[in-house]
Image (cartoon, rainbow, N blue to C red; front, side, top):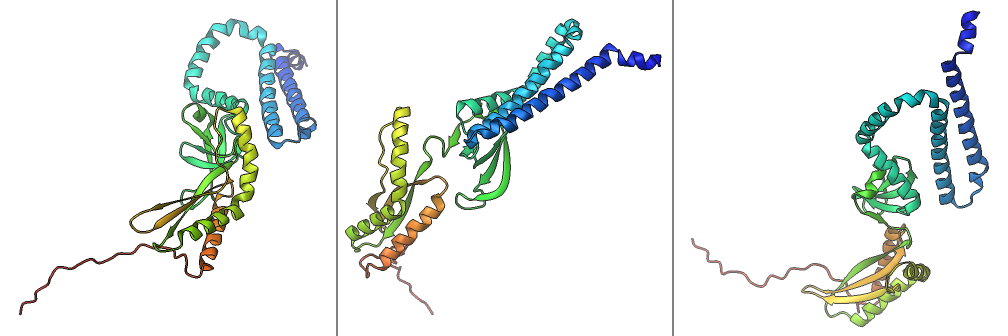
Length: 296
């Protein structure tokens, strides 16, 4: 009985129990706030950031509570903890840099979930931003075009301090793309230009109208000049054919399907031109042969 009483009133055991109960209460309050308050945030990105930051604050609160509970025990260990902390900081500098990178990502506008980015040669869509790592659904590699290949890639958040971050969809969620059409010499070049221009206007005209408003916001936010948003056709003549280039703007997630539709529209128009436009292909002309003498 005496031993039980000693355990019940033991200072160390009491502080352990107090810490466990306090940690459970703090974590429960954090989860309650996330489910009742943060879940009402309508914007998906803001709700995601709020929940992540709420979890981070809950862990900070638990650590602070731990230091308060054991404050009397920590006084004599200040110097030792300082030295140990310096060593730990050196050993875990990459982890610390990743946490700093996480804060920079959340509040610095590098990228957010749903953005399409390229980090260190790896291109993909952001599907999660953790305290230490960013998770991407990878695009490309052995798959042609902007299509998922099935791999999930995790990159340390410290990367944002080391190399450039290419964001395809941050302030301006559109990309410029081009298709090149080789036309045989002797074709009706003016008609070809008109048909290619019409194809560009028909397939990408809606993107151009939407992009104009976004580009106006860009010029107000950054020191950048106005750009030609509308589809544009240019041509150049080389040794083999006349090459027409259609430059147009497209949604960053619809580049492949849009290029497919543009080519289909152009090929359909060429077929209806009744031979006035002939697409070119690589040809080789034999200009001469050396004399050959056969001896018996």
